Length: 308
Image (cartoon, rainbow, N blue to C red; front, side):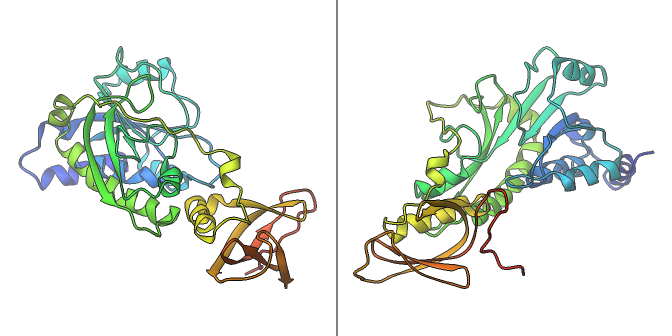
């Protein structure tokens, strides 16, 4: 008996009544940040048949925890794109539902094979369809954000809405804090949807006309060191560990850490005022910016990152 089956057996012995969805057979796409969906489904008594993920660089998403948990519970993992043959194979195992919680590839038409397929998307749909919209949410200074659960359609993030969870954004929101808010909201949303999945599916409402946000461009990562401090700091908060880029004296570099303050000065905005111990001080339009950790991504890389 596999570990997840032992967990279910223990759960069954403690509960005299099982809701209709308690024996739902499912497959799921995951990264570590969406792993809570797997945990919630297992706690609800759902039976996992397969986990789909993809090779990741750990920059935005990682899947080490997912793979470790799958190995521990004896759930098969696939690192290649889902094919129609995969969906057909799931159908032969009695799979009813495909949950999508972050996935790099388009899923084939699931309807000939499965009864349900839903995606958990990190935006308050119908606003901000598209890949990883959190960066732009900060750049646009949104006052509110959210996560949504919708039916999977061939047009990305366009399917009928089962439910969503909204929350306030702070004026100084960072990519890190917004990601954590999304994870907390995802857990609340996932518990509601999975606990009453059949009803949520049947009552899903078509989306209104919304917006599609493409992935950010490299130009949007580039800091204008002659611009206002608030704009620069907003970019830094929005890109977080993805990191912004900048240029000084014709040399481009990646910015890993920077701080600034407002102050009237006589320097030309964008001037490198001074560098000390690999830390650089720039005059911006209305103050100063200290870039204390940076790197030049090139052969023989030079780095201003401290070794601790």
